[in-house]
Image (cartoon, rainbow, N blue to C red; front, side, top):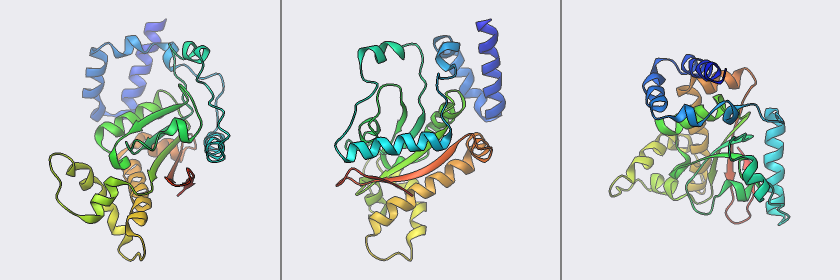
Length: 238
């Protein structure tokens, strides 16, 4: 029965991703990924949150963090054991790899609560997109947050437009299209670009992912942008 159910899961996901995902899924299944992620690992959580309820929970956690009233939930040994064989995150967060922007801390959550995807500049790459689609499709997270932050180094580099060594310029290139949104902006161009980049990456996400756009349109998924203030710890929705 478990094998049949896993087969259905595979077929369902391939139908959702289309032919573009077949090569990836072949590699994934060949690696034994699906045998490790059994029915139990992708089963429905005990409590299913609506997208709005998930957003409220997330923002309530940030308020606790800002007010220095963090509860540090889901960080006990019991929680470790509970999620060892299954994960049921209630939110997917795409955030910058900056060491000061750790979602579990700034949203006051714990082990297994947030599906984290972190990359400099919180940009959408094919690998990031695949990870996001995995989270919203197989883990059924009802909320997806693209989180930028104040004084982001990747955004600053994109605004400066200077050449960078090695592969560092790759994420700068991914941010530069967002700068057209701030052509008429006055004031702090880097700060304006942080928000513009979040908006651009969300647009790119919905444009490039049928899975995300359809689930969002059907009300199964809420996609929001946010800006994290390094000075205060506050997350503001964009």
